[in-house]
Length: 169
Length: 277
Image 1 (tube, each protein chain N blue to C red):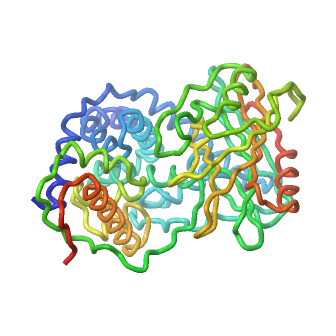
Image 2 (cartoon, one colour; image 1 turned 180 degrees about the horizontal axis):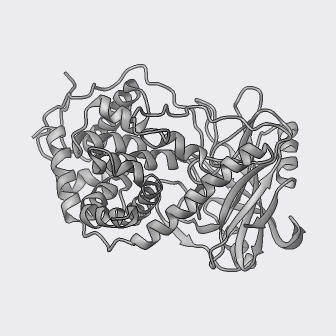
């Protein structure tokens, strides 16, 4: 079997699963298609090496996240590290009422890197270290991005009247 | 249910709701071959020490190699470090960038030379003043979609780019939160007939203002220093047809950019040559 045939078989077998992850990362169907197409083009270039990996799909899934955040590094606004993070990764407050239909649009509104971090954390189930490796950044960056994302979601939910009395422990 | 659990449930639900469109495997393979060919051009260029590819993911190979997990030197999966500060451009050295492609397939490329050693490479090169508080830049790209709605990248509204330079120029004259300073007018630029216009754009966004989605990525123009609100941006557009494909050259500056860096951007922009591979 040639690399091309092997690649085509891989895409056919993993397409739906990859598309779903791309959709969560890109937060739109069009974005998902673009992201997935670009990522798989890159994967094809390296297919000889990727196909010999123990878990090619895991590698390609991480390429999706890398492609997303790297393709968004255009306008450069220097990040100012927050002196006080609202909470650390892993802490969660109880929410009295949550409309699931409300949470997804709020996630879509997050900056790409923050969204990528929480998708990798809560959908892919990756650890902080694995997320840092996938995105090519420091663990501290993953932690701060996750905190920022969760904090933003909490504030948005609070503004929508959901989860009144949320507090950090 | 905690927010952690709600996020997991939300992601699972949203993912399972999606119906994936059919994959375009042939397109992926074709696109991959184009990328592989550009990588070979980079290596030849480096050996020749004449030209190198500039730009990150959208425009060249350098960032692709830097950001993808693992390396290309073997099966080891040690992740490459992310480039927090993009590399600078070397003054006097020709740089080549992929701009887009003709409908028939050949790549459209541009070559540029900068004079200052303070240019920062990225998807689009930019130059800041000595304190990094204000910026200028230029770009060469094939537009696919143009900004609509608020123009901010979080606002996903966009319009498809038109097919002719005149029509694209009219679209640019209607960019969100913009003011026409010089109306579209025919001119000669970059060795071709072109349409020039100058705009002032209120580029303040939560993230950044996206002028266009291009053949190879997004074109944004919001650059600030920490704690500094984005000012108005003055941007000149030259729209030309390259074998029937609209191509935009732009040169932008923050409204308070000093003359010396505006001059550097002008010289860089004037050095641009566009050709079909």
